[in-house]
Structure formats: structure tokens, C-alpha cells
Length: 124
Image (cartoon, rainbow, N blue to C red; front, side, top):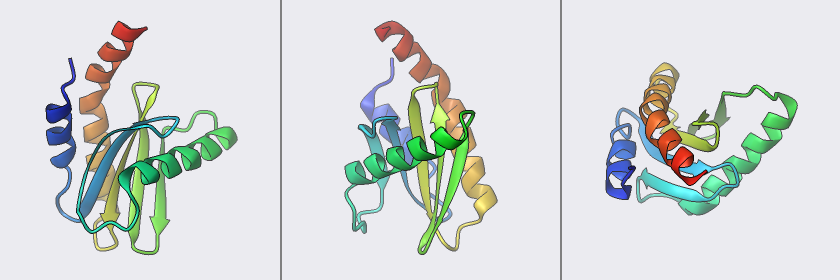
């Protein structure tokens, strides 16, 4: 069973070395958990909805999409699919090493894969 407190703790572990925030949300943009800095101009639930929309648009062009990196004016956002139905995103400032951002995204995704699969199996 995946507990909310434990999920927030796990997401928070990647928020180092330039990573400012991490989200877990479904493909419709419904936010399950967010951990990040308080200096945000857009609410985390709005961000997850926007990222889900971007993912959906990219997925229409490439049906086997596994990961995307969005390069923004103030940093980067990496997004990947977890357990076939959830999206995981991490946001980093522009000083963060892109390789480290991807490594954190991949390790967090791998860590969350089995617990999320077991929950979706229990529900379905």
C-alpha cells in the first residue's frame, strides 16, 4: 500500500542539487502528490494539468513516448510515465545538470513503479 506521507517523503528526496519540485499525477492531470519550493508562481495542480496536456499532445505524435525534457526560460522539467497510467515530473533550475535531473527522474520512476502497479492492480 502506498501511503501519502511516504509518497511525499520519497518525492522530496530528489529535491536537491538544483531540483526544485516533483509531481506525481495521472494522465488527466489530477495531482496525487507534489513536493517543492514555496516560491512558485503557478499552483502545483495547475502545473500538473498543463504537463498532462503537453504529454498528451506529444504522445499523439509518438505513441511509444517514455520521457520528455522541456527546456524552459528558468530551467527544465523532465517528465516520464510510471506504471502505464501515471506521470512523474521533476523541475530543476537552469543551473542544474541535465544528466542529474534525468538520473533522478529515472531512479524515482523505477522506485515508484511497483507500488503504483500494485495499487492499480488492486483497483482494477
